[in-house]
Image (tube, rainbow, N blue to C red; front, top):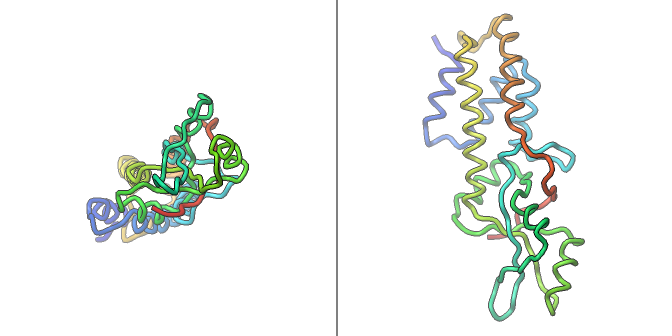
Length: 206
């Protein structure tokens, strides 16, 4: 007798499955449980977050600023504004989980595009025209990936603890209703401080 819940747990422990793979399985499970909240979250992780979307707390990572010096290469920008330093400590990352997985595995610094208006501010303290980018550590990207995997595991274990376990990939009405409260509780745990910088950045290069 097969069970999607138990099979999911096995896949969680199998290193051959990426977090992207696990999210696809989670989408199937959320659909069968009629969980719109979980489906919405999974789709955002799979395809990336929009500018208007609320960003989960685990997707906020520290970044710093670098400019390109033709002689010395990439150099850090000295920032005096403490408020801006605090904002940079929690940059919101909107990319799809597959993109974060790919860049995170390379073990190098990741360069992120910077909005034109912010570049102009930093350009004033640099005496020549050059490229300026946000930069983050690949480990920070992997921490997001691992957080998503942990959130999926937390959800699956809570379902099992409350006897929401399918039989041959079928859930009964009582199990579906019971899952709704669990799903809301899990989703609400994703969001923390909403007052940090919100920049629609793209990964450019390593």
